[in-house]
Image 1 (cartoon, rainbow, N blue to C red):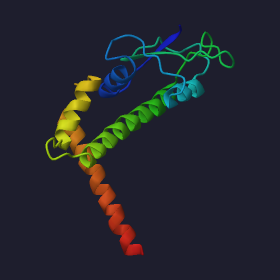
Image 2: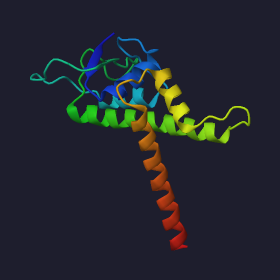
Image 3: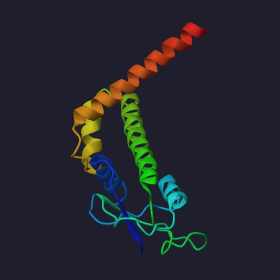
Image 4: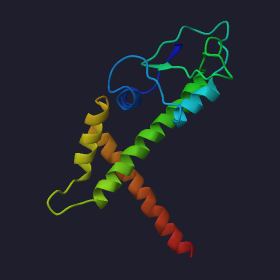
Length: 159
């Protein structure tokens, strides 16, 4: 199987390894139904002659379909492609974290009250994200909440 290495933020690489590779080092294989699989497939191009050797903190098995791009020839992700992929991974990470926090807040039971920090700790342990502190995730969640409150406030003013 053909692989490619990309350089992304360390916490994003840890998240991908945790989610798709059970926190093990080595090449990550995305399932065919995953949006990242399709995005990588779309971003692949022929390797330029002057392209440097792949280096990075995340190794990815390239999609290999029975039709279309052959990964033996189409095995290059440009800097722009890696930036787009990085943004998609970051959006996936925070979307999953925010969804989990909101679900836990709704599911509060009288005997088992889970707060936001406990949910963030569980999320980091599950996916092996240790390069970013829990406070960074906590602050990011509260920034999102403030943006949502501001938007709701502005929507009420316009009505």
